Amino acid sequence: DESKPNVIWTVHVEVRLSTKSRRRVDVIQGLVRDYITTNYDPITLPSVLGGWEADPTLASSVDRIAISESACPSMTLRLKDVLLEIHAYQLHETDAVEEYANGTPGRDGEENVLAASVCELPCKAWEGLWDGLIYSDNIKLKLLDYIHATFVLSDADVDFNLVTWNRVVLLHGPPGTGKTSLCRALAQKLSIRLSHRYSQSRLLEINSHSLFSRWFSESGKLVQRLFSNIMEMVEDEDCFVVVLIDEVESLTAARAGAMAGTEPSDGLRVVNALLTQLDKLRYQKNVLVMSTSNLAKAIDSAFVDRADIIQYVDLPPREAIYEILRSSLCEFIKKGILRGTTVLALDLALYLERNNSNRSRESETMLPYSPEDLAASKLLALADKCRAQQLSGRALRRLPVLALARYIGTGVSTSSTISNLNNSRFQTDIHLW
Ligand code: ADP
Image 1 (cartoon, protein in one colour):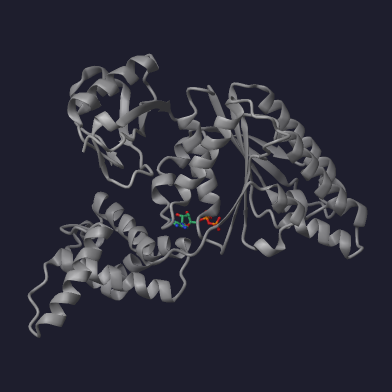
Image 2: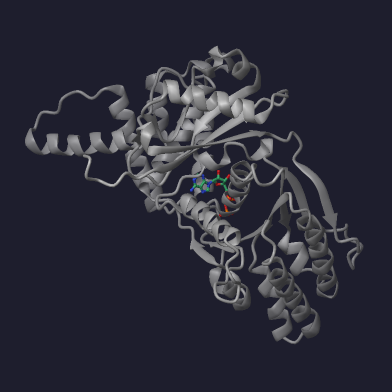
């Protein structure tokens, strides 16, 4: 339709280079762009591309090419409506590179407490985490858009006196809903998306429990020492730093201690130290503070006040539960633990469900189901059950292990038959759940 304004969507392509690759990144980016423009019109979002192995340069340098999800309502886009942004990245092998201990032995001769750990991003450990986190209300894209907005503002040199932001995000909600994982996954994502701006990225995880709630008299000093390390890190303008403060409500314990009159000045000192340091950080372009809490009500109001985004992360709804369980089962299938079965994608499962309920209303006699239909409808029913029981994402990720354990425990399988679980046994498993 010629009269419609042409909307151009930015589509992010993430190219994971093999650890051995020494090719120039711009050469690879050019090859990937050519490959997509000649082979993928329209493109599907999200998707993992194949076939590029036929190009010897790509084959020797690239591990994986993935098109990211986007806010675009359509799952396919014509290339003429697309601006391709190609990000090439290489994973760091090691996890934690540095750890900060508090340097003071505990009162009762306890070991030094680890106050924080740092890892170089993107790292192996968090690869795939982003895709494995499933939410129903686009939380992930919302967070990415927020970061993008802060970059636009910083780039435009917007006056801080007129528009203020703190680069602080707070995720809160019941335990096990993926808040900490989401922070890590977001940090990893940013390190990939921002690789053209920052040659290095780091994730610094603060261990709130040891920092805030143990020895108040030491905590104030420790916070200062830690943040002076962070300041040093962010002074390097080529380095993007994500600071993760997990379970930030333990900060309140420090203030509560102050209120209760036990160690008033120490408790307040640590809270104030943290807030002052956070205020200093907000002038740095290359830092983002992410925090999580299981008890939003218990968080220090002065901290909450500093958060630009206060995002509630709920227990997964039925659709997300289905997808979480499906992704676990697909991993079982991929690794040969389950065989001869397909678990339908959510939209197909829901489509079948609607059809089947119409069918059963219209006629008494039911047509036979295919094994895929049956598996999908059982998995949907299971999702309902899990929802009713208010299972967290963490509990759901455990469920397939328990189901398999139960199955192995029935004595049907021997060591070699784990890889021979067939379709009907798989369904027994779902039934067992
Ligand atoms: P929290 O910080 O909210 O307590 P975690 O980030 O520690 O939760 O999550 C624990 C585990 O539960 C993660 O490893 C993740 O695999 C799983 N999980 C939780 N929520 C989800 C979700 N919405 N989608 C997929 N996996 C989830």
